[in-house]
Length: 283
Length: 283
Image 1 (cartoon, rainbow over the protein chains, first blue to last red):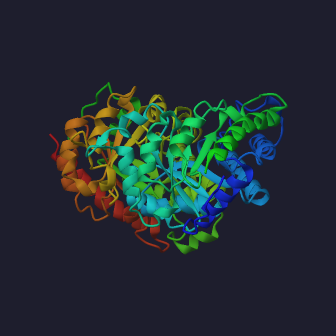
Image 2 (cartoon, rainbow over the protein chains, first blue to last red):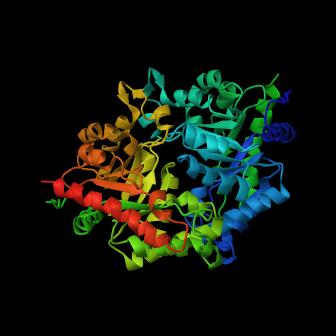
Image 3 (cartoon, rainbow over the protein chains, first blue to last red):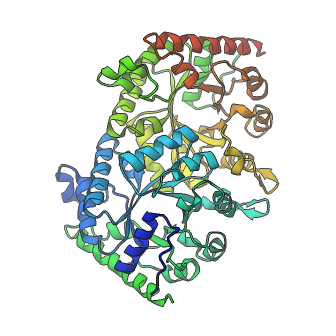
């Protein structure tokens, strides 16, 4: 494995690449924490969501390079959910500052409103990155890109069935998601962009790489079984790896018993081992 | 003015139409409440955001039919912002239950995650409606539509410059926003849909009405001066009015002094008077 450190990359990207090299992993663990799915014994503690997250983080932080709390799961619990989210990101930043953090929020609004969201997630909560929907275009995305050493992860091709409603429709003869990739490259501070690309369409990754050869891609939809991990790597890896593979439920809900954190680590290590193999194949 | 009550409309829509008839207004007031813009004397009270909102609501509720808190402005203040939002929606629901409430959140995610957002805004906070970005398609929108007597307000054509990046691009020979309108009509419970259509493009409203003749349109971008209100009405009104015209900063920041609520009412009444005139023109 030979990873090039490109000094044109923002500081956080360089840290991410260094972490991938050290841990032999490009795994992102999704913290979609749901009171109905966590082990019942945790419901008796003061903050079940944070307690669950902390246990998962403590058991898996050496196997992954990123955590991605899905903000909807916290917002669903109102103020207590926001407290759990704050405690989780604070715990991560204090104890594992090298780990890349992703607020999976899928926000996007007109300029002054996007700036509000950016401050909330980048400054107050101090996430390294946030996912953003591209529908409202340039002035809805650039307020996020303006934050140095933060990343904006733009939805390009998502892994759900609804992706075929608009994302794969032809815009001026080219699929909309490709138009999103190309147009976004012209945005100010485009070097702070990453993209969400669903793993259910691994064959599209080759074409995506032609448009954004250097960007990191956040790839959801790879199960704990790692079904198409090799295929995703074949099509999607670049010289800096350039991939963050996310797994949420397959890892965090591997067991509903008291051994849940241990079981999560066991599920994570399976993916991490496969990733180490893929990294070994790199020149 | 002769408004037809169509019993196929959901209950909340019927209430909205009755309110428009009673108040001779289809004004929505945007509560984009910003600590840097509210009168400085309010910063000394315990919850400046809620105090500001309450004063604005008390002074304007007879002039408008809807309030639209922009969620980013609350999220930017973390837990204290969520508390202010909760207090605002609770105050509205308790004291003015007939008023239509819009969570301007622009959410949208895969199915189980969209359900989380829907529960947060429709059940816990008890908003009547929420704004949603269409990029992820059918299974990201339908979880919101599944809630009876709630509305999902889909972004179609927004009023910002970035709207031209993707929304007006041709998809299979037709602008993307028109494709969004047409495709969304096939979604389950599509009768619960409304659409965001920017007022800066009043001439597009005629074409939009051909695709969605019966739906309510939420129209941002009409200033306190009501510049193009008449034009928007000419192109966009249907037999049930079918328009909610939003004004935010032009009303709520009409004055930064102690008379701010009174000044807001004065700005609102200008728009309401113009709306009464437009309603009078209806057959």
